[in-house]
Length: 340
Ligand code: UD1
Image (cartoon, rainbow, N blue to C red; front, side, top):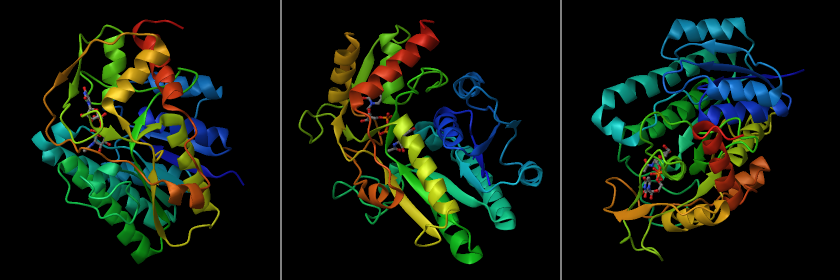
């Protein structure tokens, strides 16, 4: 029996890559998105990669009747919830916008799952670990108080899911992503931020493409080997495959408890400067960059211990930073410079 997976926010960066991997693994995928933060570029790319059009529903997950209708129209075995706002700075300026959208949409998903019995995968973030005292972080590392409403919504949604699994017997998984970067090897789908990018890799690729004059490296006086922050950059295709493993584990009855949490990272810290240098080297480009003051809210260093996901999900990040940065640049060239 082919199982059906609903991907909310499926037209976005992570959602589109997950749609491809799930489909290629033999799942039926229903894509739903309200297109509030993207256009149809990635959905079209998904269709081109797959050679077919997964059902697409334009809807808002904050609309409880639309969510109920979706679950009535399709027999959903699992739902992966990506539909959320994700800009840290904006969440500080507009907390109600973030709390309303990110919490209400997930409550509606959970209500539908409670009624239908669908398994639930929530897209969480390493942001829940704050500035960790010990590195690498394991799933047992403490969640520290969130430093932004965005981060707080990740913690609250994890708690919503944990409590619903325990009260209603739902199956739930939270995947804590470290820093997802890159693009599909086909260059048909990738990251398409609106306006000025907040995140490092789209800023790098847009600078290389001439859309931004210069990259600012925020802080070179951190207590790290080269003074710039350390992160765990995870290839988007590797990250997407972790979702297939997690969905399979839930649907095949392999979970060890109703609610499970996994770090999705490489276990390898990379500094901002190392990433910039690797981008220049692999793509043969000199990047215009300068050092700038620290960005408020940034943590010095965070990277994953991914061994729980390696062992229990049978998943491992395999792509090198170089391959990932080459894919990011191929995508940017296709989108901005129209090079095939
Ligand atoms: C942030 C969020 C994370 C969220 C992710 C994706 C926090 C603490 N982090 O991660 O939860 O999932 O975005 O939206 O809430 N940098 C520069 N110049 C730039 C941009 C970034 O030097 O123009 C540096 C940053 O200082 C940081 C690193 O690059 O050290 C990575 O930044 P970014 O890509 O924004 O991701 P995070 O802040 O790690």
